[in-house]
Image (cartoon, rainbow, N blue to C red; front, side, top):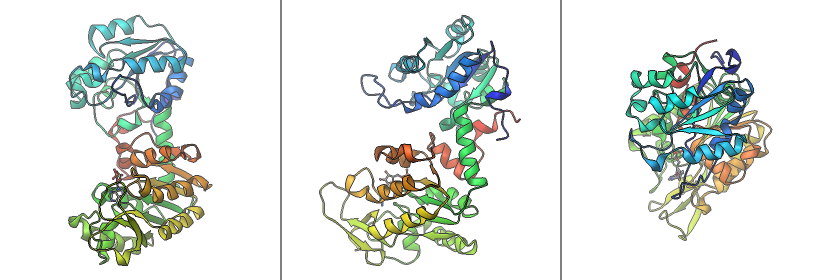
Length: 394
Ligand code: AMP
């Protein structure tokens, strides 16, 4: 990576503003229901403590839309973080102004301070320079560790880097290096698996991957627009009519580039997305007019698993079917299981596929599960993320 990282800074006794993504899910009683994101920041925070820095953490939680709202307070996160660090974490009820300044001024080396939700201020999402300057005034160095928010040009991800020396934290570095290496110098065969609802959301990813991968496996709702472009009847399945031509041209481009695109041969169909209704597996040449495809069929699962078995690098984004319904999670399960068994570098590109892999119990078996949904999609599109671009070059 050509951006500065923790090792490039003298951190001893320095006030370090660390942007983390501590946007954890909370239940109605403000209990944290999944602390993965808090655990993910521990390496960076512990590194800074070890180096004798004064650690000032800034994060968002939810979408409070520029207004203070106790529902989105980071207080529960401070408690959990303190528990996991086995160390006191001080909390400042505002991320800028007197409250934050006083709390920061009191800090000693190795102290940890968590600032209240940065999205309680309108200036955050607007990337207001005045707000960014106020935030930056708390510190000597800026470390961005929030990969999951780095596709947003906000004050705490981009703005502050204008006012402070800026580098990447451990998590940010890991995300960029693992995904960057996979894209730039993959061990081959390099297989990408794309699924999920819409072709429209993934055009950029497909276009970028066509010049990098050996095989592209397409499942999920987006497969039906491709099948339609080949002249198949797809019944009531998900279709983006305005993307049919594009799907055809992507298939043509793949042939020209010698990239194999594999679409489903068989799919599971049903009449409506409701629990308890009958379903059956049919060939893609025989999808009934009144049915919709909701998962890849057994033949396709086996075909995809075979390709994954022989791969050396596998990147996956998007479920193979409506995996939220247990009966239609089999295709997604088959892909996750094939990846878990493989010796390849296996990367899950965040979002729904990350949720599926965790839910199905395969998380430990993967090389890397990205902590960013939108951010990892943009990364796979080959776009430079604003939060990364803003950091200082080596
Ligand atoms: P995305 O956010 O684009 O990755 O899409 C994820 C969503 O795609 C999930 O909620 C799945 O239920 C949905 N999905 C996957 N396959 C299908 C399908 N065949 N028909 C309708 N929705 C699907």
